[in-house]
Length: 277
Ligand SMILES: NC(=O)c1ccc[n+]([C@@H]2O[C@H](COP(=O)([O-])OP(=O)(O)OC[C@H]3O[C@@H](n4cnc5c(N)ncnc54)[C@H](OP(=O)(O)O)[C@@H]3O)[C@@H](O)[C@H]2O)c1
Image 1 (tube, rainbow, N blue to C red):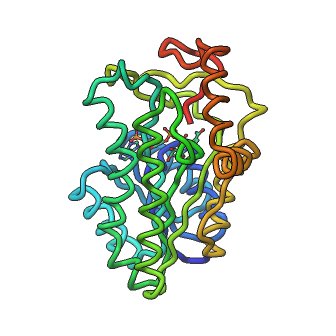
Image 2 (tube, rainbow, N blue to C red):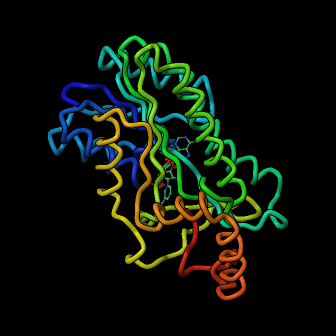
């Protein structure tokens, strides 16, 4: 990764920030991104203070014009682009029958077009460097989870998209990888969308079922460096991938059982035992 230039969307905080640090530790130069310019500036300052080569540009990655500017700023600053990690996303906690169509569209846009638009914008530069496109998926993309319909829909679509892209770009020497992230520790200020489209705090959940952001970041860097196609993270993620593939009805009945047993966990009012992926 030495001197490789990497854009990581949604890297002002959370897994994106940890991934930026992990790439920098391997000698990469990183363009940070997010919408909140203040948060982004703090992260940029922190990483510069650690001796890393970084820049930052606030942009909404669901907007193609914003994405083109983000890529151009990267080329102007660092002269090339080798890796794009499409990490930014908005999660949710709302039943479909209670959710407004606008809220559904916001979450789906964020998780689907929020990956596709930056890739459109970065395609020429990454093809020129024979670099990598790394999508951040979720175990919620293996099976549609309750209270997460728009999120699961977006994450599931990323699998097909990554496969089409890989089929087209492999002959051009471009690597396309996807990382299926499992439950991971969240920043305290992480927000998800409720049924009315309000940003609400993410519910707390046990550390025992979560990976650290640093573990996830390391897996993202490893997949990129080894140019691997896919990796599934966490014990829960690996188990779910296996069960969904070979025993899908077990997953269906398991979810029905857990909704009856842990009714509150799926409620919009929930503040503990969160299931937002
Ligand atoms: N945490 C988990 O348990 C978990 C599980 C499975 C998968 N994942 C995936 O891992 C990735 C990172 O998750 P996370 O937990 O780190 O989430 P997070 O803390 O909410 O971070 C996401 C970042 O994306 C940015 N963002 C959101 N919408 C954006 C937009 N339209 N344009 C630009 N930036 C945008 C946000 O910053 P601004 O508000 O400044 O825009 C935020 O810093 C996501 O793809 C998520 O789906 C996470």
